[in-house]
Image (cartoon, rainbow, N blue to C red):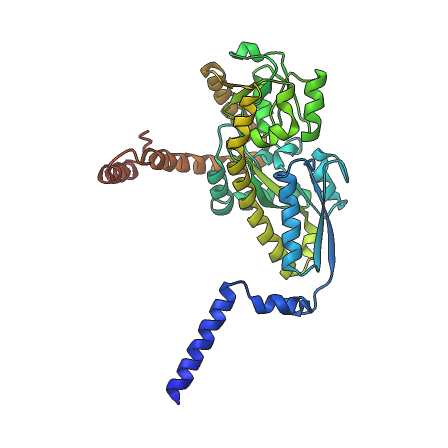
Length: 388
């Protein structure tokens, strides 16, 4: 009898674990008739999500749609979010303001669009000669980045959740070839964030335009050059039709995070179960958007080249001048801006450490015998120096 009870108990436990691991199919059936399984009767919640993206971008705007759909699925439709393209609720570069003021409960955007409020906003997205997508996520989730950025966002009555990454971006579209720093001077270029500050330091006339306004500005001659994201999105915006020189690398954005901002007071009034759903959906989209870019950019680049686009690498003259200007700008902001310094100093330490590790691990990719790779790693860790 005891043996039978033990077997029954074990079978029940195993079945319960399997059910949970497979996503709780029985609970999903129950949710269709009642949301009570979430911990009591839950209210119906309707949110608007402003975005900085045109609907043509099935990566970024598609990510906002995917996040809204995921929240709806997890809540059985009790928590619904309606995404709005740039210009529907507010202009693409006013998403943060709309969320702060409560015109929209949440918004999908890039934090570096708002460096006019505080230059430290750039760290939430990407900064010149900064972190790759993998490194950026490591900083945000494990290196104190989310905590640091939300301390800053909180000053504007918002919370931020990473919700996408473009990966490494390209270096922009130019109507004419530019080989030296002298050739940059006087150009009108669309480029946001601290990358724009660096280009300005190199003599460029900088503008910040939302994605949907870049093509007409290039076509009409209002700007001579523009950066957006990478081959897949740039192709969708048609930038190759009005500028044939496609530069690389995108040194100002090696791994650009996107965020979904939420009005803090509205968030605090949201049931905890819904908060968890929202957070989970943002994390999923953070992975999915980067995967989409990595999967689609290669084919798009081939198509662009087939259309007559010329790929041009930035020369050492420009790269060296840009790197020097970047860190001079960081140091200057750190002196003048306490919040910038509070983020920049630990970020800089994190960057140094992760670049050290990245240099070691990249050098080991199928390049050396295992025993030699191990010895190099051991010595590098003991000496704590960059060896590559």
